[in-house]
Length: 184
Length: 150
Image (cartoon, rainbow over all chains, first blue to last red; front, side):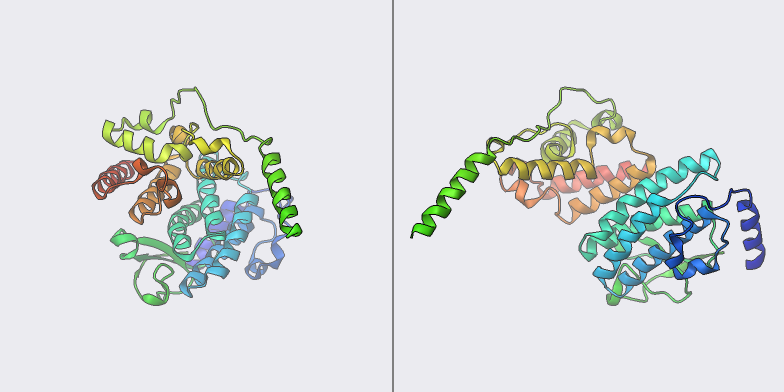
């Protein structure tokens, strides 16, 4: 099933022009970049975003403000570089809104105390989830939900593991939350 | 002793010198169709409170205090206002996408809930900008309603 959706995804993306953009040589430092289709710049763009998003998530799980800030700075750059030219105009509009919103959160995460980072991680997670709905992803993801965060208003996040590791509560309540759905 | 005197003179000259570098004033006659109050038809009490407490740094119009005439205070204020408007400009509310409005409201609500806004350094001088507990509740309730209706 995962394979099927991966193939559909790459079919959808097959129409795109090759990686002629400025991103083609900058992505190689990312470890996940090696698995990616080399002829697809926007796919790489969303993968870079997802990878740095996950770095922030992991840092917040570990209550590590500094690493979250670093990844926030990288994420900001990823969003800035993201090439949305291969999407339909409706999708582009949606992506523009998402990126504008997400860039702001990434910037905040790059230079804020941890509680403020978490606040923006909440906003950011919504943006990244909606972005993935448009761009697709080649990683298997879990969309998790913590019902307690933000005065019981709750917050979502994405993870690559089924086990719950809560980025909002950190070491206070690492197991709080549940998987809402799997994204393939 | 002579050293102190020299330093005092240098400081004095520097202080006088920087007075010749004025800042741009954040003031504007324009009426904004995209203003938060216009777009949302905000009840008068809440409108008044938000304008008094937030608009100095989060709109294109600042009611400046007297010490804005003196450097380096004016630089300090200019910096704050620039940063404040960057984050949120109530005059431009109508131009924000729904996604952005939603995020802004989320931040507005939690900043007020956690007493992070208005800034302590601001309410120290602007006593009327401070939110009472009931005002806090009212504004949060209103903002939450806006957010849910998006």
